[in-house]
Length: 604
Image (cartoon, rainbow, N blue to C red):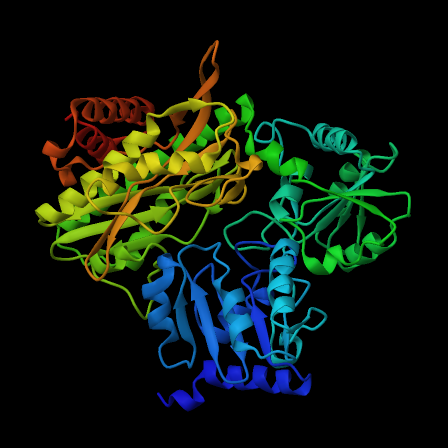
């Protein structure tokens, strides 16, 4: 291919022409939308459209002469392949939260020059960091221009999928009760109004779901909550036609009125001078924040709904356990068929793994879709934590090695996310060693008890310790929060190396992943992931303690274990886990799936 006429290079030329027309010297392209979503509707996938990099996180910077993509270790191998010949350099950063792109911009753009970023898609906190750095470098920041409105001629329109209601028993707490809970929190903050842009917060608060974002059952909307009266509790800004008349009436009965999606900014601008507005600076864009009149008193705090939805009720936890049993039954069906197909010598690829696993999940009654794109990586592909097989690039499952499968489902009663690694042919001693070290990390954290209120990042080292002891580590976080038939990645808690803040305190009812890993670039990858629920452990004169209840139900393959590396207490934990998996899933399995389950849950 003539790289001079590659799509990426041609698009870079269009963007640079737009920069020249507006007397700009650089543009920052975050992986973001007006709701600061992780997974973006196509309309706001500008970074992917321009660079060709398909990873879910990364920041692109384009100057008149250079272009650079900033990505963390989860994406390095992928980015190197996808950026080849594009004219865009990969700059490696230690974590997804790194601000190296800000430092790079301040160095590359000369004093007196200007940088653009679309204020409608950059978070308020990120914009403040960027502005501070550029001001110090004598560089002007423009936030009033969307370069892609000119450069991206065939830019997709807004999604138009209908909104539907999440009903009892899967939604145990009524919408009116959730609104009352948030309004009480507003009163405690001294706020008369509260603006919410994050889509999962809105979906949870109003017991609504949608299909505007791949894998996440959410819809594009903003919400303005009013604590000053009783008749109107909230205004939902959503595109016309997405909510039918019957649902509109039910929302109205709970004090929720509808307004056009594009009127959210104007509603903020129209707030009276006597208003006190609660906003979450980490969950609102600069563009929306700038609409608030200067006379309005602004209260900055985490969205009350973000904290509330992270703490699943007992009724929700019961629904999640049911979802896990359905998911586990699908795993048994898939893996039994997969191993039989391997034994028959059938041709299996990473793509067919995804197809067959998805088909098994679809036979479960409460499934509504996948919770993310399945990662099925054989050997070297498994060493890329966010790898995805495509029709043009995928591996055949044959020979010897390790197959890593990371997948999940969206059920009416919960969201699942599970990673397992399976032996193919003969597994080497080095592979077994890596697998067992990762398993030791999973077990160590799964067994941990900790004081209620412990900041989640403080737990990260527990899972890494068995690997650190051998001079090994991994570049991603150990655990992320998980939503309730919502986003598979949910805050505020994060078991990772991130700098903790008070909102990350571990509380009863939180669901978090435990997923340590080891990756040998070009060879193989190992990751073992379960979801766990924070449950009370004990209370004494030193306070309340929490423990993890493992929610995920699927065998952890013992054929990859180097038994000499496991202590007796670790073996006991694994045997007890497998006994529970067998007890819960055996009534849901039959035939070959049941036989597979029984074989894979034999005690060590």
